[in-house]
Length: 343
Ligand code: MRU
Image 1 (cartoon, protein in one colour):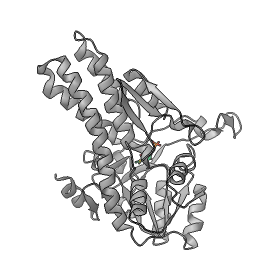
Image 2 (tube, rainbow, N blue to C red):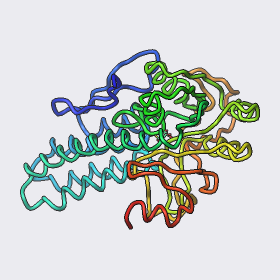
Image 3 (tube, rainbow, N blue to C red):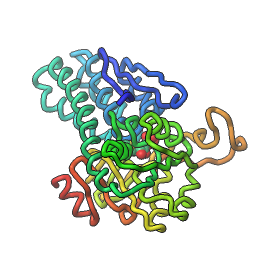
């Protein structure tokens, strides 16, 4: 896979700047944890698993630069700073907790050991994410083996992960299995992850894809042109409700109306058993300019009130199955999710 979303290189974190795609492939080099936090906030890097990997690398980078005398105070500052970047994707908090565990368990072994182990853990999180994506790609491809016309929303690809992708991982696995299919790509207003990123990834992979505006999805379904929908996830609640990019809920309702299966793909690190239902998932509100402007140009009258939630919640009864690296979770989700993650 040619896309290098994020890398640890010579004690720097290097990210493909996703805000510039598809026109420019340029890399942002982060030299300290503040730069990593800023890159997450500004969506240089985005997508739930990729945000988790970036946060882990941010901790490792910050710790590497911390002085022995102030190490514990610095660690807390780094941790707090990264945890405040984006609230919805649970992978961020999951990755930070993994890093904290390394710190807590090994602190008595000295600062140099902790620094080294934090770097190793960030690398482990990176590698495990790619392995998980490839694993559930196979499960998902089996579930979708008879679908010829797929639809996806946002970007749940190599760009949203350490590599390969969640929903696009399933789509990649379908291609690797030699299936014939095509994909409708929803543009995903307002940040246009579909038009800019998913279209770019699918084109690179030579997977037949058609770009549509979000408002065209229902018409296509009504015309019988969609066999299945597959999306990623930012947080899966204990009851199976799923937070994902704004507009996902609309697509799920439409899919239900037309009897089209609606699948969610994501690693088990996206499951949050501490969130009983979607109601408890914090939904990020982003800058009004993402809606009122496009590429810096105003498209609405100055001073118009804007609402810009970055995510919505799809209730569990609209979801046909959730695919993770451990297999396929079917309804009823309340019990099956617990069994799946072994709790
Ligand atoms: O705001 P973003 O671009 O970070 O939102 C990304 C999504 O909603 C993705 O669908 C989700 O993170 C799953 S990606 C594997």
